[in-house]
Length: 396
Ligand code: ADP
Image (cartoon, rainbow, N blue to C red; front, top):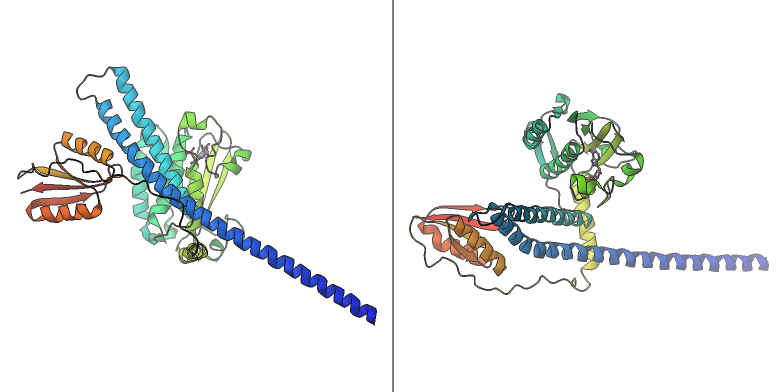
């Protein structure tokens, strides 16, 4: 009896010790999770700031490179014009890379929101057709977009993100196909995605977008890595075909955000098929996703601020044309806090025949718009990607 009691006590002590060990491990895991969430927030904030800091000087390089390449004063020789074109092309590649890195890091850190709405298949077909028909003709490739009528007229998803994936798949298909065809087919399916997928398994209708090409294909080993960031099927790919190696990584992440999945079938020398499975009506996952982001934020919000500072640009005043404005003149307003870049844009605007107003901040821009609005015949706000904010106006 006493032996039994001693044995029991010993067992109890052992269980307690195990429990303590588990508790320790749990706490250590929680700490690690919080640390990771914090790191990933630092990382995405850092990248967001970085990318702004990189884009600003890069835009100056792009605009000046282009101006040199245009050789208006015909004082450059053909070789120098080629150099200027190379500066512009390399700068453009870099700009794409920066945008892709930022996009991927935002998605990975859970700070991307999904904006779902109805998207008509007709609209989707027109957009994709417009983007690729010309390339298909130029390259003598067959190109078709088939959307099965059984899908109905529309789907409910984030239109921008869906088109980002499909455009990426189509542009890869064109890039890696010398002859034959590139086809996109959308149809209703009841299987094909990974078993146990929690959204697709429960979706009322699943649509499969299949992008099929007759291009070089991807070997089985490479199929495992092409969805990873910066992976290209062969090391020489980027030199021969261009590209960042981020498109598929981004597409796969977005497919997940939209409640779906991206899969690949391919045979070397015959071609590839990328299949995007999506619920026809996307609901719910955005809530789950933002809850996850909120959780990560809650875990980290009590700790210190991220060690990231936006570089402070001296708010220098760039001399502009505000004292020269005369009736009838077209005005370009540049809103930019980097003085050097603002003066590049100012000069570019002037060379295009505008009087240019430069505002350092959004507030200053609004004040200027208010000041000039009563006298302006037309006031258009345009947001070209490369130039940042610009406002066009014409005075009475
Ligand atoms: P990028 O095209 O910018 O290099 P992606 O992430 O879109 O980056 O693609 C990664 C790699 O996968 C490509 O470099 C290429 O090697 C391979 N790949 C993607 N799509 C195809 C395709 N349709 N046919 C053959 N290879 C492909």
